[in-house]
Image 1: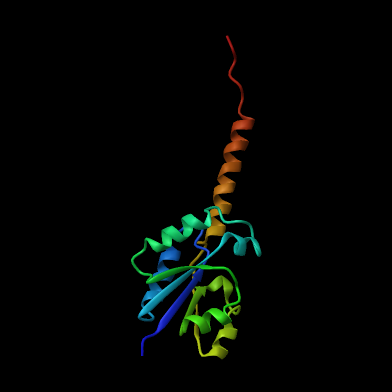
Image 2: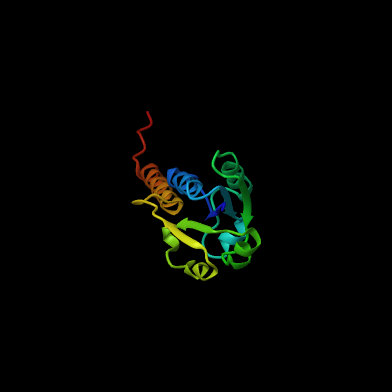
Length: 147
């Protein structure tokens, strides 16, 4: 029997762990569907993505692993699981426990380990910190004497 895998994510500031999670999902079944969270959905629980939805979904569509890429408009997946006959659900381990309820629907749930410190949120924080350091340095430098 063919297994349908659903990988869920925002995929903001696309990085290697995003790719690893999608590749992992590809290896779990015959059909891989990737749900990319819309800007509206992301803004309902955290700061807006740095990369707009249209660009994030285009990046994921360009990958060789997904069979189908769709907008994800909700964090509640019961109906989507039923509508798409999903057998396996994959999401980053920063959501650990959030989707355990899908197991009651007969779905295998995998929380993909993201690895030490690699996430879009961490990347944004590092970029902001580097920017603040540049601003601080430029604001605190001494002006050269004008002759």
